[in-house]
Length: 367
Image (cartoon, rainbow, N blue to C red):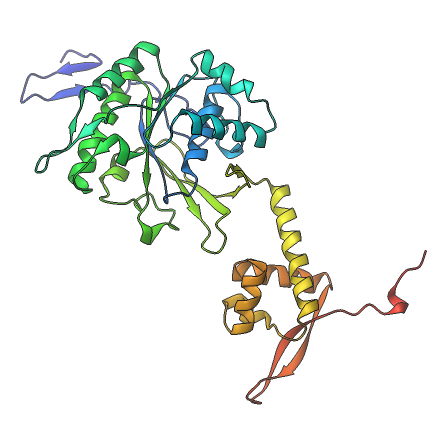
């Protein structure tokens, strides 16, 4: 049988592909990122900050170095990036990019130069890429064909379409509809070598989940994607966020990337030093609270978030039970707090409560 990279058997339309001659899929666009020419998703709750995360990724990929998301560091030289925005106009994007630059301590002229050089391109007034009739499956519009032609002509490496519900005018959100959207985008990625990322919302019931199938509507989007980036939010602190690469067909998944939302809305990754400072600040808040409210907190009650006193304490310091309990343990180990036994209200036994440590004059060092 004659060998070739692809041999058409001319039988039932079957075609063989030579895996041994296929080569590598290519270096991911950034660390833990998608491979070239693949389809992926950026997902998270409505208003969680996906726009800032998306712009940060686009800017770092266009410049070739990390901005505020250091775990997703670019692994290749600067690449051509395109942002198709259906929610935010050019003025909003300019404001956000300036805030991202400020948070990373570099001048805004840097991203402006990238745009002028054609490395960072924006489309903010674009007709839908898909339309669906009352009883039909979604159909690609001429705009999608024009987008593919632009990507091919200008050698775009990364294209983000934000969001799905703007790019596709859908009558329903189910597996059939999402499949009809995902497949053409996968085809564009395959034909052009441009990585196509689509942003979408998670379901309200599963906004805290890191699973790639926690999307609103059907699961076919997650099934079609080769890479999924998930943004989550702490239930008790809207400014405490998490980032996870919850699906990666070309590398390992990554969980537990800790983020914070700054006063200007920018999403930045916390370093180990930042997290140590945060833990230190939380421990000081715990000690201060106990000094003002001695004998009112039981460590175990705080750990499980039980009882009125523990709930009031957690609300006052704006912390999760696990984090607050760890801060209590640190304060006890460093002898900033102590415990004493206190009789229970029903007089059925005793319980440990937190008290401040009094520093006597003999313990003070006088220089």
